Image (cartoon, rainbow, N blue to C red; front, top):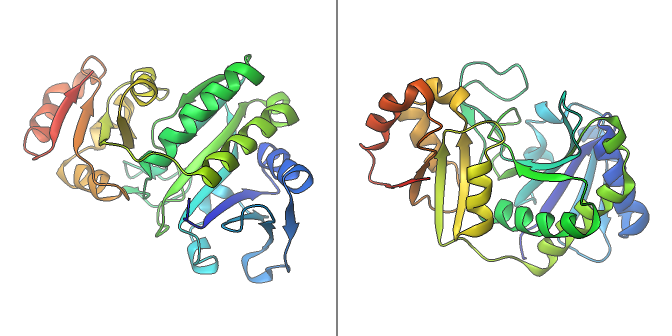
Length: 278
């Protein structure tokens, strides 16, 4: 992969700290000079010249200015904790964005971040296979698009370890995540034949997850049924445009559109994109 990749985490993120510690100790990431202007520390991979690690002291969800500081990056991968009341051991990944005016968790209202469908698909397939062998107690699933940052000028992918403090400190799971990421970033990955934006389903969209694992589809932004009220022509247009790869389809969880189903169908039928129902 020729893209310059920035791995980003925070000293206040326990899972991110576990992952960054592994990268520094075991994956030959060497410290560079302190970047005071970014309020963080920079590390470069000695094995992979196109990969850097940045450890900030702020909130990952509000890092809207890092493409100004790290302008060489072609893609930002955030290493983060995943928090859930269930405390089920889970490895997740997702793109960022706010469909509605609510930006309680960072980012700008009604703004979607740029997605990189083939990267997410490659990571999901690789981490699913690796977890099955090395950390079978963990569930692996994508999440619907949510939270900040939303305004970076390069793609953003969150890679998360969860869902409680026990897992955030799990060095074995952190190693599996980091090794998987480095492997696909080093070897490169296949680009998707079909790219869709996805509408419907739950926050943990099992149907879309299955589609990524078992088909030629990649997915850009994913709006769960809880966010469908905010989907209008303008938001749909933004979901299509904020992908580094051309969107070819609108993928619908046909039984997971809830009470917004009729309205959503009228909106999507006006677009030139092909509809794919699952």
